[in-house]
Length: 119
Image (cartoon, rainbow, N blue to C red):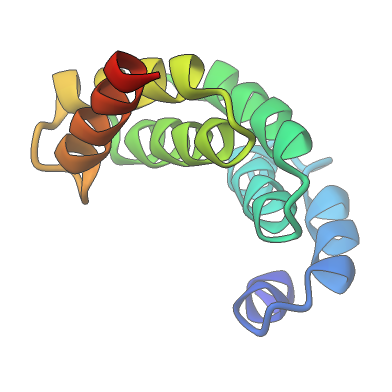
């Protein structure tokens, strides 16, 4: 809980070690990885965010769960921020295939497809 407060307060360097410690507990591993990935994303450590979100997705039991959609969406955001349009588009497309109305995923898919066409 303290780690989440630090994350909300944008104190990422303090939050990451707390989430890393919590990750050791199997009950908290998935949520901790998601939070670590978010911290890395907001620190602009996009490659680290990608790896962390990927690790978390491997642990998700149902790829159609709310958590899986959130992780895949965040993975797409990290790829996009890192300039990897192709992988970002793949991630967002998978979310859209499961839940077409998830956040702004339709808009992101359309924008990335347009970037690919014009690029």
